[in-house]
Image 1 (cartoon, rainbow, N blue to C red):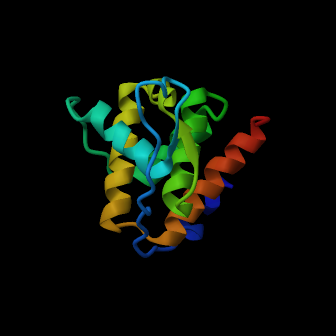
Image 2 (cartoon, rainbow, N blue to C red):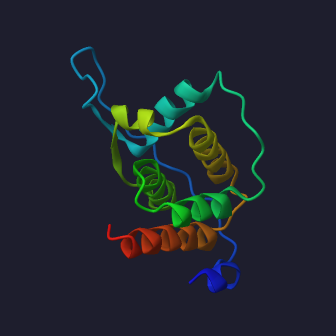
Length: 141
């Protein structure tokens, strides 16, 4: 329910992802499964040489992108990344990084930074995940 976004999202406490080792090696290849923490490290490596524009409220911006195009692969991935940051869980394939265009990759890095800084509340993160998942369910996913 878009009209309830602002009132439903309450401030959150800082949540950090636990460090879990992701498998790596020459034989791992594109199908390599990575923990949420290892996936974030890989995202930062890919994005480190790309310029980023500031995003006012990255949680709100992410939800709006997902709501506009909930069936797009990169926005399904963005929903999973939001959930991984919020609930400290999830597995990703290294190849999924390529599904993010430069604008969405920059948004993901900003979300990771906001999460690490604890500037958004846990309730705001949960609300964002719930709205993103609802949009995808509405799109048949």
